[in-house]
Amino acid sequence: MKTLFVKMTPFDVYKTYLGLKNHFTKDKYDYHRYNGKTRASLQSFYKRKDRYWFEKMSRQKNDQEVVNFFVSNFVESTDAGSMWIGQLIREGESTYNSWKRRNESLSYVFKNESNDLFSEYNVEDVFDCTSGHPPLLKKHLSGDICVETLVIYNRIFQFSKDFDKKLQDPIWEQVSKNIKKYNSFLNIDIFKFRRILKECVL
Image (cartoon, one colour):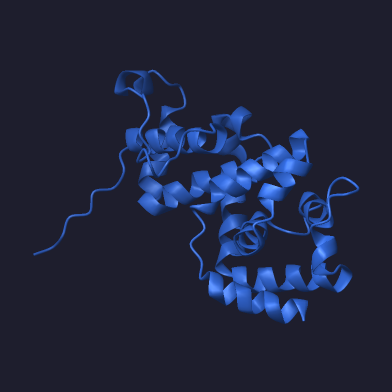
């Protein structure tokens, strides 16, 4: 007997979008804890002019792909709160595909970024905030270190708490929020990445 797989409806895709937007923009909302629940109503959804796009998404992507699509776009945005559907329609697929390629070869990406970083700085200097933004943050802002590498470093070094105390500026605050909010979506073998990092630092 075949097991029937029920895909997300267009309204489910819309609710997922709202839930993940709340997750990445609201400090007290956790997508996993609240199981993505929002106050969205079916009536309000059918009044949206962009409803067709959610219908298209429900046809083209499975449930996990829908979640990954929104996660990738919110975490890559410099201001997730101001992101609107038109932006996702125009640029979302390109951002999602770049995110997929990076995550499919994350060990390789992490090793290369770590080699470059620690060939230039020692471990202490990487996290040094005495002169403002530390090298680690500067490298991320310049595009040399991806957000996944930041999340992995934070799991290993727990640096964000220290940065939160020392860096009182909106740029770091947004990056800090991204690290915290993205962490629960990044499923990796941390012991594997510890080994890679050890090779890069030594």
